[in-house]
Image (tube, rainbow, N blue to C red):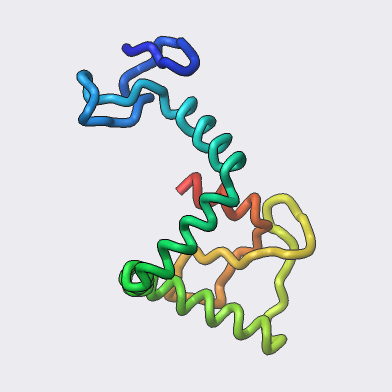
Length: 136
């Protein structure tokens, strides 16, 4: 058990991120407090952060290219399935349906259970789609 410096509540050690520089090897804030602090910091400094990121990307284009190549190799089937669905929607052969979980109409996304079967999609709204991926 460890007391969080942010919320002052005693929590399990698994509720703290690791930090090898600290004596006990853990951060002083729990994961929830750290996340809350990070979101507030980002909202407050969003413009500066975006400028810094754009500057870094311009100065280090090879870093982005390497990451993109790794992602494309890792998600090859996923990208192909997404492209097939998008092309069939564009060609009017496939029509997006309402969300199969909550029934919301409008902008729905095709969720693939199996990327080898790209046209077998479950139509989900953004919220439900994120929930499905979080559950898996």
